[in-house]
Image (cartoon, rainbow, N blue to C red):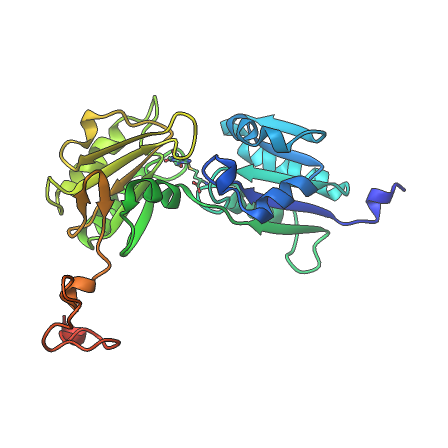
Length: 280
Ligand code: SAH
């Protein structure tokens, strides 16, 4: 038996952030360093290339995701430390879920399994994109992926409708690709059913990467700009405003305080629920 057979293999599920080393967490950096085998989509491999010297690197295409998970398990069972890497956060439309699904199918268990698994969180696209345009997510928000490759479109429409009606700020992941062009048009229609045409919208492409491109638009005009696979679309809520190229969603301080004098408004108390109470 080789030495490797005595050490349990490990799978590290690593989110490396939006793509710039400044936004790679310390643990993600270490985890990639610990790995002997690094598996990921080719674009991701390119983004972390400087960290991969001397490692076995396995690049896979988009449609081979389950194969990647399977391969990670096989190599970990041989005793290797394997990193499966995703951009952003590995648990947000990333490889963490599919890997656990494959592991469960293969008879693995979280306690006492033959392979150790660690999920390493990262800065997801919505946080990265929000930071580039100011503070659009400061109140309740949700993420919706417009990709119907694995999710039936009616389910996505239902979520868009619910988010629009409930006035969530919405971050749209996977908004459009070469083949999926109708989904963003439908999303805009649904959102316009509940929100003003002038609602601020940010189109952030490749945040913190070389070809970063940021456009501030509105719900009615957003489709006049380029939207693609590397864009995240941030749609404001009914209180979101723009300010010299920034997009800002108020936290709610103006409900309680005069923002100019900081005085507490009549009938309100700091540290207590708003005077309107549970009935609103
Ligand atoms: N796990 C990733 C998301 C993968 S889904 C994360 O947590 O960020 C792929 C989608 O993420 C893209 O279609 C795009 O909408 C978004 N995205 C990923 N990286 C991005 C970046 N640097 N800038 C803007 N959007 C990005």
